[in-house]
Amino acid sequence: MTEKIFYTDPYRYELEAGITDIIEKDYLIGLSLDRTSFFSEGGGQPCDRGTIESEGWSLEVYRVEGKDEIWHWGRLEG
Image (cartoon, rainbow, N blue to C red; front, side, top):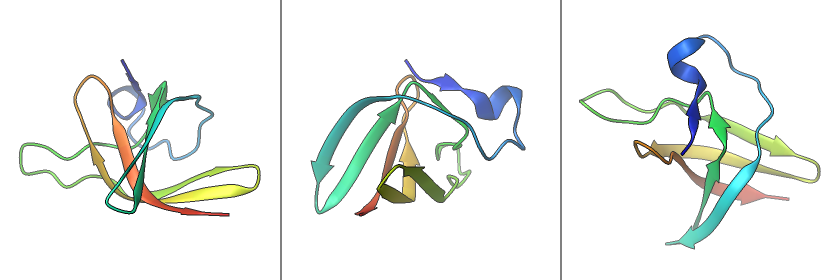
């Protein structure tokens, strides 16, 4: 289950998180994190977009989805 920082601190845009799972689907990479500040789409509300960065790589996040486990979908660079 992903800790949803966007509920408790909606203006936070930087935080450290651990990767809990990685999948590849339709040329996109999906990351599941132990905590996130990215709001997932639902109820007519669009999802947040942004960048997840680590040493030597970054993921340009285009789609965020899920309820208990939040998935961040995008293109991997680096």
